[in-house]
Length: 412
Image (tube, helix red, strand yellow):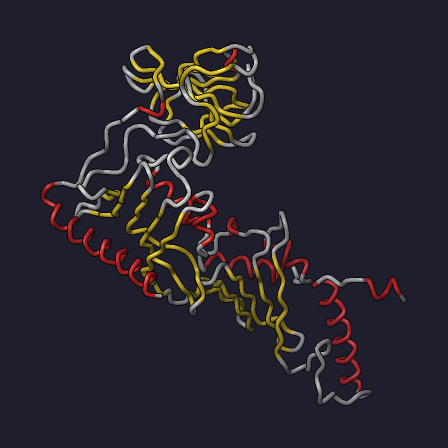
């Protein structure tokens, strides 16, 4: 008995049991051996009633495999495949955990619904003429929302701490990454603000939309960013003066990390003596992606003495950067290959003269190693003069929304 109590039945097993029971009932009814029941139980649906089974996509499962698990015939599976394809269904988008519902009327399968997300469903309906696939969408409501908070620990934890999600942290940091190094310039009691579209379906949060404005204020920085798209379709984030936030060189080759050793004289942990440290050490977990700080051409991609596995990139006739102690190289990274700003060129390791996983990062200017923390790169193109009034109107609206949000917090 203990064994029987502990057993768990899969959706496929339940379907088999129900179909077997229904088959027996149908046979008895046809032979007149049993009157049709007037009350239908959860495991014994009436032959003229409708009911729904739910199942989820399993790991490494294709749609045909899932339908086969539900005891559908090969012919019905093919009809379902064709109907979904005609509705624009992308069979590559299946992922584990996706919900699929099967609607039955009596013993007959009359419909299948694949729930892509809160907004989109793909439906297949079966009748005597075949199978028809359709794509249905629900209306999405957009609410422009002001969000603010105080740094308590890290930017990541602080934004999540006011009830938001990781996507917002990543994109907030992405917008300001040229002006704020959140590893060295962020500290407790700094403040952040942003104006973002939130998308809702039937009052349920669906996802974030456009970030219209950001503001970060700390001991060493006080910077704004405003989204603006001109009539030609060129868009960017600009500061209050209409200057682009984008620069030709990133502040850091890592998105989330910390500096563990700065540029300058220090006690070398391996050689046990004071030596000049010509770069910056970033502490991060083994395997963390490392990005190129600017466009350029790879000039070194191999083991290189104490650097261990090294990537060197020449950015122009003036600057080059080095990334040392890597565990491995990014896809396709080799000498002579052109790379773009933000492209992954390697992964955090501990090769060469290293006491543990970290990135050793250098910048060379005119053949001399310089302090990476003091590089001031030029900005990208500013707002065009002929569109400046339009930009100023949008900026003023965003500032007013941010100020109102702060006032509401103070009043509450």
